[in-house]
Image (cartoon, rainbow, N blue to C red; front, side, top):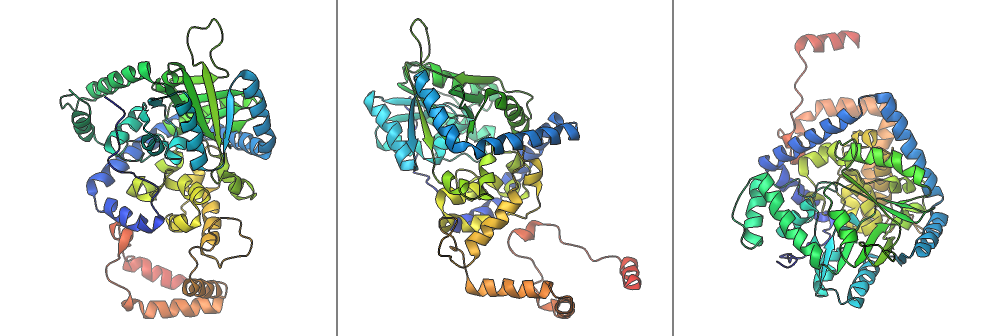
Length: 480
């Protein structure tokens, strides 16, 4: 079996289609129930890993300080990382755009006449759409993470950054395996499905020319690439093929090895409710003379893709603190309702709404900035204390305010509408004046019969407010 070819290219979709995609999911009771159940399960597992609120807050504060400390030194740490990696024998490449990153990776593949690339889990490779680029160049790109393998067979994008196939049932996966894996009979036995996938992938590890992985933490002082995983495919991708290519965003750097354990603890417990992951890989050099395994050549691709734009602004820089645990998605009432595909971007949910505008521009993502209730759950559970609600408000201002001469973000003012801006200015004036507010409240109560009897859109699935009991209304009237 060759690397599965996706039936059609699922590239980044503009946020203009967000409402329609969200509506499709909201109107599908089965999907809504599945997402709700999955998110409840993940929230419960996370809560069990942090039984002591004081310990949790202490660890979160430590994680925040570590990330902010390293981001403050990011330019110098990037230079230090490159120096130490090069000294260790790892070749470092810089890519400003996804196109440049794909060109670098495919150039390495072509240099080695590679026909097959096996990939460990890497959201950055999803971000640059490497599989499509490899397919166009005639190079097979096979996902080895089980969830990623499933969505690749389905021709879909991951719906969650930690659990890519969380939207799939075992029956759907069984059908995919039966239709796409030669000689496989239909079975919805989960253990059997895992064994089928494992057998297919183990055969490919033996013949792959290139192994590709992501990076969770890159340690500048030692030139070490750290990779967190549970299935072992990351270890196979980084040791079995003769060439290993790692790709990561420029923000994943820490200065010292001692910075890794606190972030690692926060990552595993926040992501999957595990005290520790099954595998933790540390890669510092290619195979040395006398060693029996490991790649003979290791490369690291450092990708910008809008990250430097976020870095340039003191407030927006906090976006780069993210360690990609997915906790914000698991606790988000919007994500829980609509899942990941509705967003149309590689990174869905709250973190996607604050990072995607830097990668794709506000022209494509302005609508996503409003896809939040601003309930604050994402900020409360973020293990490194990213103030996601504050950043969403800032992005809304950037997206919908009048275009400026020297904008902080690409596409600033893309969602600006003169009428809507005038309405909000009027709202601000009313709410800043007690007299105007009382007048507006009096008018609203007298003309509420003009509002529609049935709420439209996503609010139609919420439980409507019930009128207060008469005795409560009388009590309120007495107190006023």
